[in-house]
Image (cartoon, rainbow, N blue to C red; front, side, top):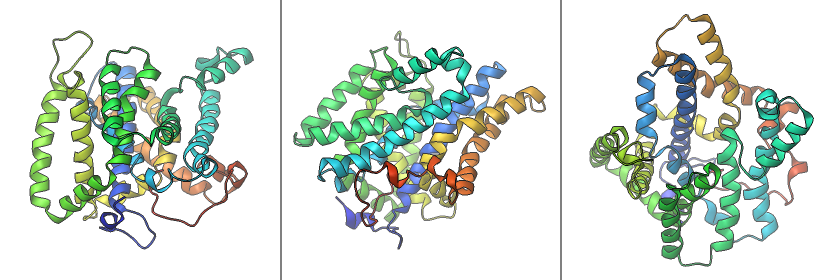
Length: 356
């Protein structure tokens, strides 16, 4: 699967630093999107962060799914019990746990304040992924689907997923659209992992051409992402069928390249740390995000939408990282680490697996 390539920049702990860095960049972009759009809605305006969010939209989630599929080949041929424990129950545990936590925190919005409404909300959330937790939900779904389909020829599998991605742009059912739109990138991470590792190695070995390539990509992506489209239902040129797929793939490759370059510098350290704990950030960022936004908007001490968005984003990323560290060796560690009671297969010796 490209273990030789994975050695570049590797550590004694068996992790792949550029993968952690890429995951860290992705989780920051995700939190930035939620924080910025939320601040803009509450404050009734837009700031400089909105442009950054728009720029990242074509590739923000494609790269996250691509990285999440990179190490799937290490476990996909295991028996179903072992595989389900690592790739299905793992994500299902965190989805269900944080579904309850988030739903209780937003009780009035999710249930109308009644027990019956709360039960109906939870039942619906088993079919239609809830709120910001949809990514975790889809990782479990994609893991099952990929194992079931792994006997198909790779070109046919990716080709069919690409067609589904294009078709999904016309589907207005949000949850189903997400499934169809994202699967091709998860499959690409799984099926094209050796090529992706070679790309990272090439970028690290030849930083000059890599930077030039990133500059060209940034110019094209920025133009398409920020230019309005004249077609109804497609707000920007980047959202058009086929263009969306191409930009998602190009952006994922760009983040891989960028991560490989950053990993050779000290700038990568905070992103790599966030990447190693990305599940904690993804699950809990809504708490400090909402609290910081409410405090800043209520006090009115900062009027600039962009600056408020930046502060909220920073708090929303750092808050879960602090919380995870505080509870790591306490009875509350179950918030971010699945307890042994929720495993259905015995633990195996640690291997290269930073993409969970």
